[in-house]
Image (cartoon, rainbow, N blue to C red):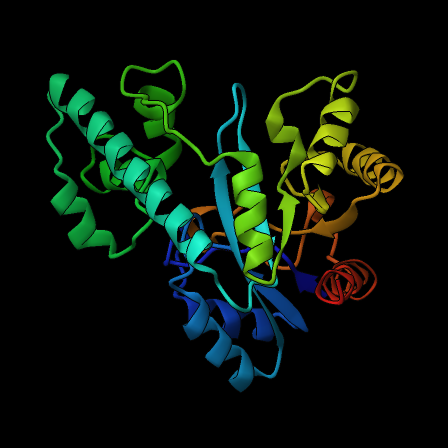
Length: 284
């Protein structure tokens, strides 16, 4: 059992990078990737923990991509030599996170809920502050009962305190990941909010732009959808990955090493899919 999509407290997960890796080992995983949002800050700690825990570690990241509807996230898997280009892209995304957070906090203040960015930064200690942290803080302050209620009442799209966030350009992100020794993967494709009639065509366009893999297996999709995504992706030429999108206690529905339908993530996604793709890319 493996997992190619996890999050630590370096972004919006509840476990520190080392705690996450030791938890993976405790649950019997043989390999795991850390893919925090718009940051590489947890990778060194996670890598050292993986050496201690004797499990294979895949350094990664999850980047927010500009997209007109739904949500477009790109995983970078196998980032073993982060480039200056990637660090510049991360700086751009982090700066836009701050601008979005400030806009959300301003809108909250306008309806009588006063929270400062300094408060959030002091409490969460992460370079990737975002809506989940604001939602958690609203729950902590008893303004709402749960994170989900914070989204439903204030922070989700269409709610009074929602703010748009600018993402990275697709081709720029692809280039930054490849220059860092990694491979770009479309995370949870169903989040693009496209019909099955339009999705294959868009996937073909993304393949032409350099995205090498798709995360066909994700707990946010149904098993039948994942099978269809895998078949479609293979036909286009993508390699296929699977992940849990694990966040720890903050997303109890996501179980480490489990994907859609609570299916264990088989090591074939590493041995038969990701590893050969990385070898091929590094050999030119």
